[in-house]
Image (cartoon, rainbow, N blue to C red; front, side):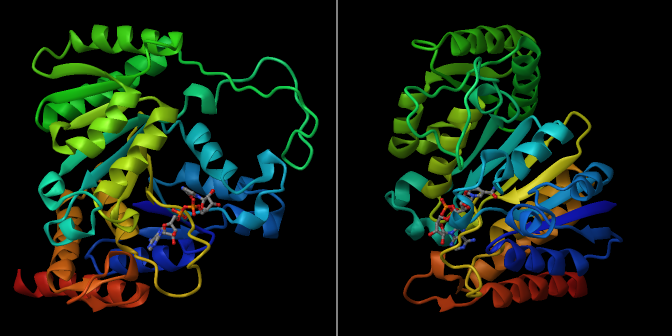
Amino acid sequence: MKIAILPGDGIGTEIVAEAVKVLNVLDLKFEMETALVGGAAYEAHGHPLPESTLKLAKEADAVLFGAVGDWKYDTLDRPLRPEQAILGLRRHLGLFANFRPAICYEQLTHASSLKPELVAGLDILIIRELTGDVYFGQPRGRRTAVDGHFPGAEEAFDTMRYSRPEVERIAHVAFQTARKRNKRLTSVDKSNVLETFQFWKDIVTEVGKHYPDVALDHMYVDNAAMQLVKAPKKFDVIVTGNLFGDILSDEAAMLTGSIGMLPSASLNAGNQGLYEPSHGSAPDIAGKGIANPLATILSAAMMLRYSLNQAQAADRIESAVKAVLAQGLRTVDIHCDGNTKVGTRQMGDAVVTAITKTTIKS
Ligand code: NAD
């Protein structure tokens, strides 16, 4: 099982170190190799996704990714910015399906900004198409950026585009996933205004005919944004495009109290995947040893389940995370009175201890 470890920038190095520590106490053999990505790679090699890093990622069964970015790179030309590394990895590895679960852990219902009864037991999954839409559509016409900006320009534009095979394949993934859960799928679009999303809606409806056991409904993205804060539990699986999925998955993340708790998986057709926390590099807390490593540790669990076929090991990690929350251990982002405040490393150690205990018991 080959894993490419790409910690990246900011808190990325701190949280990935904890996830690696957790992987190392499982009784499994991994080949792990680490490489630079994002701002760290730009500093060392002049590019956020150097050839050597891309090669390592391509040859691995899975990539464990931290986060990239820092405000100091905001003036760089767009292709050299740290975030371009993620887009490059998605494109080169063909990672078209992004899974973002939003689960509200029993012990953290208080951390949500919504009333506890609205989020208690919340367990929804947002499936975001990841390699199309306005993020990848080539704008027609030329623009020349100066330091990443367009001084004196009269207009700026991006191109929203989806092809039939792109929509079909994400729709199939969504229906198949919904089938394994509660057989309910909501497709989110903006078909009342955007042609691209009328096209999307028509194709999702067509694909749905192959899955008569899954109840499909359609919702406009503005309504979906409202419903997520009004009655989030009415959703089960949501499928949507790249742009809407980016925004809705962050909104759903916050329903659960902390973005520091939420993992994500991005998969290609061969189940090779990139696993990363849903949050960014958090430059405001980088180097302080206080970042929550649980989203990254849970991403490692998703990696074991989806790309490495080790569902039992994934279960052990997830149970260990629940156990440390039950012990009352909290990083600063999920802390409240009555709990024990811990740092990044202590949280990682606690998960390791919880896993070791289950090993001894079994
Ligand atoms: P962010 O997710 O990095 O941080 C938002 C807020 O959440 C901050 O207050 C931060 O301290 C807090 N936070 C995030 N993760 C946390 C954790 N594990 N534990 C505790 N608190 C946590 O988003 P941002 O501030 O908008 O962006 C910072 C940088 O990250 C930017 O350069 C952005 O482009 C980049 N970014 C990268 C990714 C990625 O690598 N996939 C995703 C989003 C943003």
